[in-house]
Amino acid sequence: MTRIEIRGLTKRYGADTVVDDVSFTVEPGQVTGFLGPNGAGKSTTMRMIIGLAAPTRGSVTIGGRRYRDLPVPLTEVGALLDAGAVHGGRKAYDHLLALAAGNGLPSRRVDEVLARAGIEGVAGKRARGFSLGMRQRLGIAAALLGDPRVLIFDEPVNGLDPEGIRWVRDFMRSLAREGRAVLVSSHLMAEMAQTADHLVVIGRGRLIADTGMSAFLRANGEGTVLVRTPDPGSFAVRLTAAGATVREGPEASLVVSGMTGEEIGRLAAYHGVVLSELTPQRPSLEDAFMELTKDSVEYQGASA
Ligand SMILES: Nc1ncnc2c1ncn2[C@@H]1O[C@H](COP(=O)(O)OP(=O)(O)OP(=O)(O)O)[C@@H](O)[C@H]1O
Image (cartoon, rainbow, N blue to C red; front, top):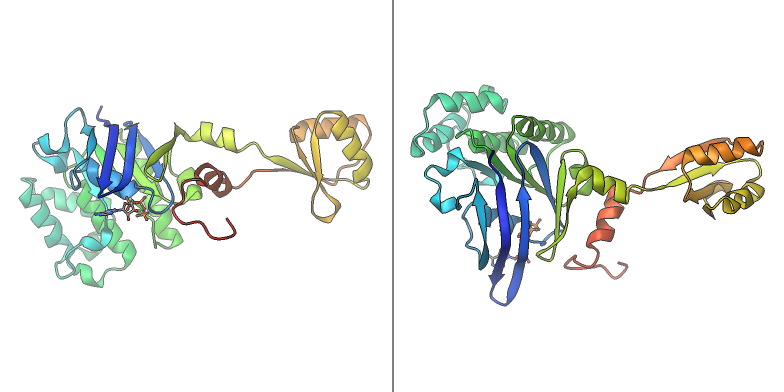
């Protein structure tokens, strides 16, 4: 099983340390979400994984070998770093064929990846006329040419419409199901929550979190319960006596923390209290992410 191992990875540009002693592992068979605010160092890290930037210190290995030691890199690791990078004047098929030939891959792979990316129908068209979504698919097709066990995607859903986003998301998941190691970056927490099994968070070049997605959701997902009852004042007293923390919510509701919805319902039943609403509320994942990275965003507005 091929994994990416990143150890003590550091990148300096002049006096700026943009990636600072970062270590994590991208495991096969899952989607690892690589999350961080703009400028956190995600792209730089990805560029170092595929040998486009040289680390100042530390190492990256793919299946135990450095990128430059891979005999045919395209068959070990595929990457989509910048969908706009496709030569616009070339037909999609020719673009992929040139890439296949340059890497000693059979031309049948071109047909296979065009089909896999769902763009057989535009194989004869020039990339110049492609929508962003089509370009993205062409970039993904190129990344898959060598049938690599490791795939890296930098902000693959940026600028896509909802259908395009869903397609990319499902595609990442299907690649992971095939046992591949998939690393995908985003600055949007909610996007990652729907795609990733594992989460690596960086801010200002430093590793902030390296955790399973479900553990992250459990740790950050403990929310409050919105309660409505005809006499909120007296029920608030009962809730507090039972150990909950209660504050006033909108329109005379109560916002309760420290008790589950079920416990609150039982307490109400015990005291014969009528409830007209009992709604668990998850804090938004975006909020959890902002909290996690608040010390590491590059530029904070005056209100931050
Ligand atoms: N070639 C370079 N020379 C100098 N500084 C660079 C270079 N490449 C990146 N940087 C700087 O490194 C920092 C990290 O950039 P990087 O693109 O890796 O972040 P990112 O997390 O991918 O953010 P974004 O989502 O905005 O691309 C930024 O401050 C950026 O200006």
